[in-house]
Length: 439
Image 1 (spheres, rainbow, N blue to C red):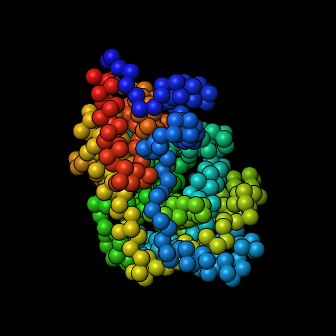
Image 2 (cartoon, rainbow, N blue to C red):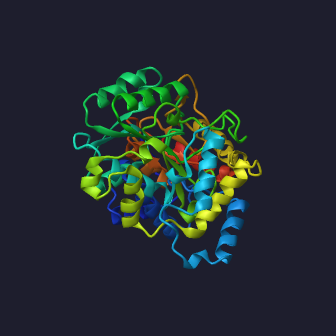
Image 3 (cartoon, rainbow, N blue to C red):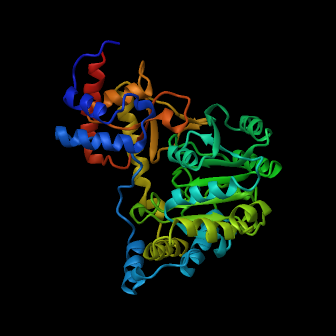
């Protein structure tokens, strides 16, 4: 492939920035690496990028959350440490929200605020990996959020993974059991809808995961960062089906991570919800008693691990999320409708990329076209993911390589959140120029 020297941004700026950041292989560059690179290129070139690298919401925060937090601040909570296990209104409304939109019974005691879902996964990894010495490895159903593997590397915990694309439906059982049968897997981790591919597990697949978790006494960590954002199914009516799909219907060996960042547009306050099954929360493990001084799983999570990491999650933000949970359960706040803009952007952006020679990498959800949501995946003929990312930088477009997410495929993850529709003509101009430069 002969590349003509047609670029939007001066080649020297891009090359010198990558050299300065010591990034010769963009296939394995982290999200934050790309953020730093793009920030510098933007500053040096004066060109505003089409930024698709970081999954950051761009819609305004909901009024119920803002008003709830303001009211709490006016009452003086900013000067007080919250209880580690969470304030009562938060815990009660979180429990109610799970019942309203998942039809799952989880007690308020088992609903815990965390400093974002990332703190929740960190704590769960640490606790679960110490339950059974023989089970020292965490299994990821990939592609997935790369920072969770970084957390395990920091903690010194082993992990394995497989790309689920070729193992959907009934094929998932045999593949998953091939890992679990070895006896070393303590937890299974996945996101649903999936980051980065936007595939959504079907009920039969969740049943397979739940049944195998029961058979092999393995705990499932279900990351619901994009709760309700499979827009093909409208879950927005509280206490009525359809509900958000979950493995919790098929096993008691689970913990759910519900992020407030995307579907509530409340990322800045760093407040997530960890919902642990009542059975697991109240389970006793002598191994945890030996390791952490407490044997009850819930007490270890709150009284040992959370306590060692922070003095509690943001006090005022707990009231914000409680207010949004309450409004959603009361039918006053349709959180699904408020974020459908992301699905519209994804559909339109995919059309533009396809027009200029790109393909959608993960294009099917088993036998149906992939849904339109917060992310989509792209590739370009003849280029690896790392090569494609580097070339797009010269045209003011960013993303992250799929290799960094555990994918076996070449290409990029594109996040739609920061490309407003008014900038679509700019995206099209740049992709046209990019395509011309390669032909």
